[in-house]
Length: 266
Length: 300
Image (tube, rainbow over all chains, first blue to last red; front, side, top):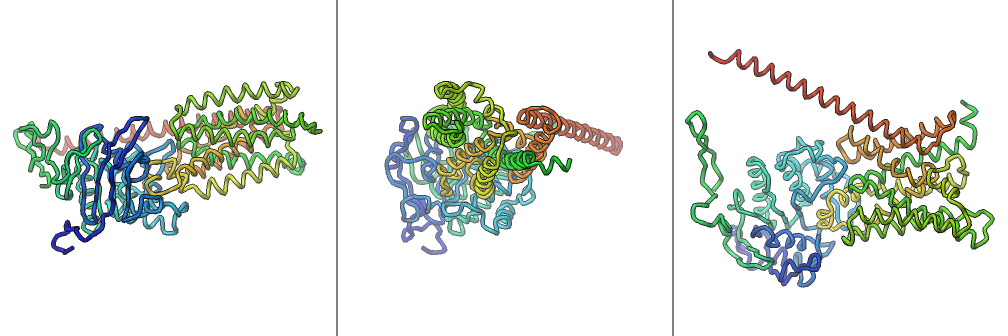
């Protein structure tokens, strides 16, 4: 691998390999034999419409759902509670939360736990603060997580994954319901991780601001892979002519006759 | 007053009240977190069947003290019941509320059947339904103390992991935490807490001591750890006050403790609501002032 081409991974071993993965939920097969590879230093997007099995796939990859058939290996070993130490997972925002309030720092600290780590390490507080600071939300440290905006919550959940210093980062729809400044902050944090050699798997509805991050895409339809390679710029109805929503910039006419324009990063 | 404090019965009652007040909210915090506040009731009813089964076993064995096996029976039934509820919930066999309903009715009905089979009457069950703190002996105190220490060591000691599992199970799986085992720990802690608290408030009201302090604490705190700590203090406060008042007035201590909890919740919740309302009004007033000064400052 040369420094000039960070995507050249022919002599690297994959961070995660999935072969013929099948997942059944409530007696129904949702994934019908999925293959997936992600290498260090690259970002793979898992794309597809609603109900295509994107979230089911990442849940199986992290062990939150059992695979009914197939194999998943992480850095060369079969996926287990021990290999989980190298994975940072960001579930969909709606999956988290309970009946008791918790602060952003408490949530991030829980990212320091693991298979042999039922108690927080001594430096948990400092590490959680540093992770929040990396995402630009150190000021939210003692705020109740439920009182934060969607974008702020998402930054906290990403800090919880990054505090583990993972070699493989798996994110499920991190941009859903996230404001533009937070999207920028997330994009920067993810790019920095990828450039530092981490492997990133990211479930996306559309590429949006993450287009420059993503190296290749795996597109799912009805639980099967229908495309591997160049990320599609838009999917489904969005691919129709006149539906190109990846504008270079957008101009909104204002009531006083002027226009308000903002740039979307290329 | 000094006489009262040196009275061994009063000492025993107070020790048990402090232990139960401090431990019940620890487990209550996890149950509220998991939105299973009524789990305590479900397990409590199963524990009642355990009391009756212990009674039946005692009478079959011809024990002099018929209810000697009542508490061991309650612990066994409660732990088994809690684990069954947790497994059914985790496997999605039935919705949590349906499982709980089955436990409620199944537990109380089999309790009544078993006690009548043992030749006892429903009156024998009353002490377990509503608590009978004035009958605690030193053995009860030591049993409660041992159970309480176990609950505190595990419930407070493992709070980071138990928080992670109850807050976001999917993430807990991803980091490699033993999710299934930790869920069972919460269920067993709940079962042990209920049997330990049964003598003070009874199975019908035990959930009140677990949940009410957490409900109050949540209004005034933001962090999970702080919620648990404040809830423990509130639990001790209402249990000691409740038992203390019954030394001077002939009232049922378990019921008084729970009513104190409800009153405290009402006062704190309405004060918090009032404070929020005041803050909003003040913010509105400031906005109006800002708007007014901007209009004045703007060029005509």
